[in-house]
Image 1: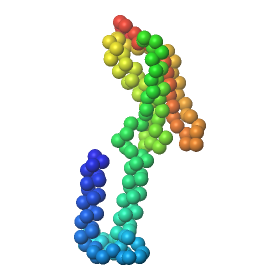
Image 2: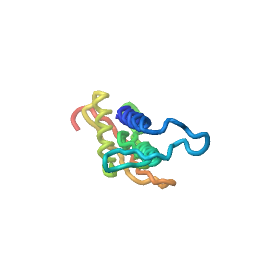
Image 3: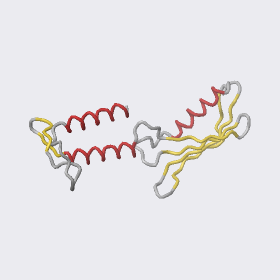
Image 4: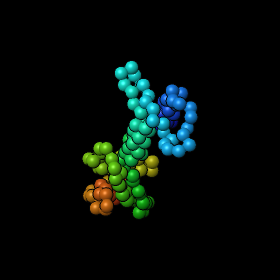
Length: 149
């Protein structure tokens, strides 16, 4: 997805370059003060395209819609007991109510990977860590179980 987006931006910039003056001024701005006719009824400047492209890139880097909302740190406390600590991205677009679902999903994965029939939640809590930018957190301890739940 990122490669395709970069290729499209590069192709657009290269196509725009063919319609500009070929001389670069010795002093002043590197971005020429030229209008680009994008459609028959719409023209814009190269400067605006560069600014909007940069803003879109920064927005994508900060929000990054393809990255997971939660990161999970786990520690094995004993042979069948695990601590799961979860942190949500500081800047996110949704996912506020999915902490318990993420916790249960990871517990199921641990149980299946270890050949256990299920798990029991020994403790679980959610909250908000108050730093400069608040961050939603969750943590809990599970014990993997043989047999039925």
